Image (cartoon, rainbow, N blue to C red; front, side, top):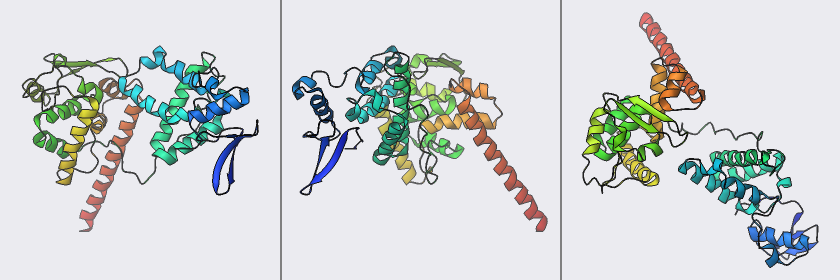
Length: 353
């Protein structure tokens, strides 16, 4: 279990063992450190009541992190999030569970930074940054409703991505895409083609109905933003949309189905997809580290290389802001600059020869 520093609690060692006591009351705590039961016992000692009394409402007690999170998760702002987003947020809430009985006043910027660093030690940098982001969302919501006086997570810096890590969700090469569309099972070909030629997100692809195919256009509503995306059907996508209608054992009306003919869950699709890609990778038919989300990056990068504007990229991929489009443009610019530089080197070499 990850240990967090709690104000007023002192760690001590006696006869080779470790225990904790409350410096405010001077009494030893018997519950396991960092658990909700531990904080309940502390509350009971300080309030001069028995532990059973304190257990009646420990997590949602007014003025605690638990009360804030409980109210936030019941709000329209939280329940209106995409299913996948709520699931990811709840993973963070589970990680923070030992801290829910703590008073809001304990959460200043320095304490959020310590939580971030504990999360990094336990689950690496990306999870740690997500912990800060979720806390910031909860506190931001709470400051408008008098659950908190301020947002202590707002200016806590993110941990930088380690430089030695491979690029995540990299764009697919043309050869990799062609290989996948030729060798994968038909139901996965349809899935890959959908994102490769529209940029649709994995979660939206899994739930995409056959009725999204409108003949000349394909349309869906993004679960992440709620926005409607309508695109002309790419000529290379059309054969795969036709293939989708006649996949064997079809029992569902979603565009992509499993081998038994039923719709995928997102986790189920992910497991099948990664297994298939690992096989291609082991056979050296594709490079290392291809992801489904990388297909979305492929579309963005291709559009940037072809000279599409930020607004055009933004509208095609359904981004709310142009920030991501600008990243695709920077990647495309770097690729073009590198290509031009190699071309100059090549010309210079020919002159010497």
